[in-house]
Length: 287
Image 1 (tube, rainbow, N blue to C red):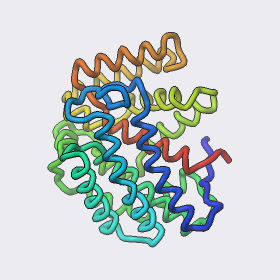
Image 2 (tube, one colour; image 1 turned 180 degrees about the vertical axis):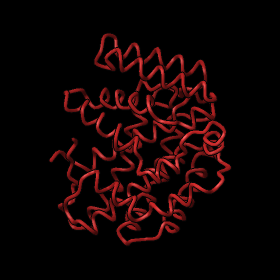
Image 3 (cartoon, rainbow, N blue to C red; image 1 turned 90 degrees about the vertical axis):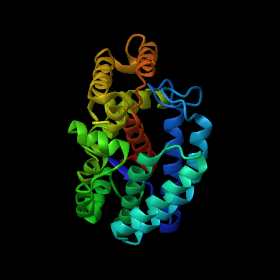
Image 4 (cartoon, rainbow, N blue to C red; image 1 turned 45 degrees about the vertical axis):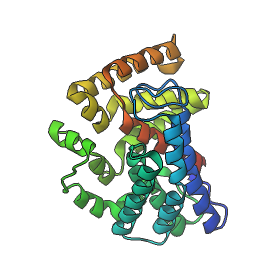
């Protein structure tokens, strides 16, 4: 079982600032990872023709204040409506920065909630916490509101795809306490790092672990249910062949990337989850 302790030896104000900075850094961790099937990297645009690394960097820059604001809101015990307003405002700044391109809507939602949860943990537990406490804080403070949010009819592409194909939506994943993040991504990343894999390779393995199990509505939006199932199948095959540490691991990852581009598939939900897992490894340390 993974045991992590939150780095909060500093006074609360400094701890909150560190949590927010780590959120920004985790978005860059995800962007810098390559090869990455169908997703934007520093060297290519994957399956996208409307965004590149420069678009992502502008987006990340626009979100710096947001993560500080929502971490503070969690520390202050804010209602979900306050968190939601902060997220909507952040999305507006992102769209202004990117010329209307959605680069980080999912990360605004997911990482924002996690930062708020970390803020709540700072208030309630001081200098010690584990990922399980982050999850508990999310569910205890905002689980009811997130469950109610699931009843809304989303007009966003991902929400429409989730309803059409009977998939678990991002809102439902959040209401359940992000099970793929805490039960798959975080353990996979910790295991890969413990085996001695370099950070980039560990993150790549983790991305494939996430893709293998996540109901990724971005994949379903772009490629239908068949496209999402194809992506899951390729991820499971990659892992069954030893992952990145197996024979020809990086070559196999590049082959998957080429196939995703050919089918215009982009696992954006998996990318958001990877960013969140990177965030947890940054704000937490082995206990």
